[in-house]
Image 1 (cartoon, rainbow, N blue to C red):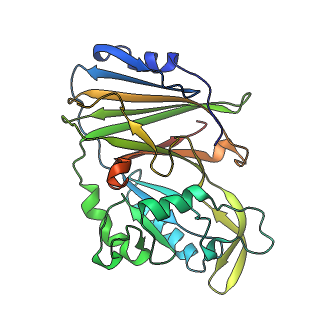
Image 2: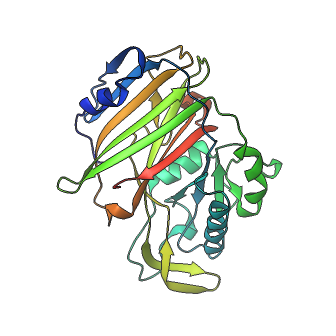
Image 3: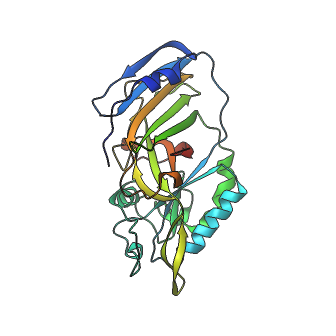
Amino acid sequence: MKKLFLLGAAAVIFATGCEETPPVINFHGTPGFVDTTYTEASIPAAQAHNILFEEFTGATCPNCPAAHDLLKTIQDAHPGRINVVGLYPQNVSQNKPPAGAKYDFRSMDAQNILDEVMKGMQGEPSAGIDRLELSSVASAKIALLSSDWTSNIDPLLVTQDTMNVDMTSSYDEGTGTATVIFKTTFLKNSTDQYNFTIALLEDSLVDKQERGSSIEDNYLFLNVCKAFVTSGMPFGQTLAPKLTAKPAGTVYMATYKYHVPSNVLNPKNCRLVGYVHRSQPAGGTHVYQSVQCKLAP
């Protein structure tokens, strides 16, 4: 992960005009990261709940293209409500690129999410859905086989969330850096601790993919996770680390100056997916809300 450069002014400007109390800006010694907390004068309405799919997939997984198609169908049926993060764990045999492939999408971050958050999987293709245990078949494994995906969507779409999440990004082509602002607004009083994660995805990558008993030479890869903006993987960063009590209306905003890593081919084809979830001591499970935006609008 490329390290970040210090940015504070944007966070203050973002908060201006809506605080009930002056913003508190915390500098944690991490280059390029600053967080701000303040209280809104009125509590906003709750956003619709967006579902996070953390899909575990591989280029030599013969059944994975069908799962990709299924996810596309689910997204088309619920526009803007399904956020997919494509993860290629390092130590899964079906994830080794086919002979002659240009790219290797595997990463240890993906492997660590699979091992430490999902507690493994029954097989590929699998996906964690809001990091919830949704099927007795899973046997405490959170990542579900694709046959269980569709049946678990509708109940989650009507979830009443206790926080709103927003995210914006701007990109400087000259320096190859993005300014990413991640904002969480608490809608109810809370004393729980939460973490958050921001994943960097790239679309429109063309390479070899096994499909059934053959290799498709010009397969279009989408949702490929290339890196994470947040530190502390696989559990992400602590949200509002200075606050024990978070009254309704509390806003926590994290701002990054993020240098896009060299494994990204085209920043214009990149998106960010951010999500708030349980803290590391609680296993990082249960995603409360997720959001996405373009890296370079």
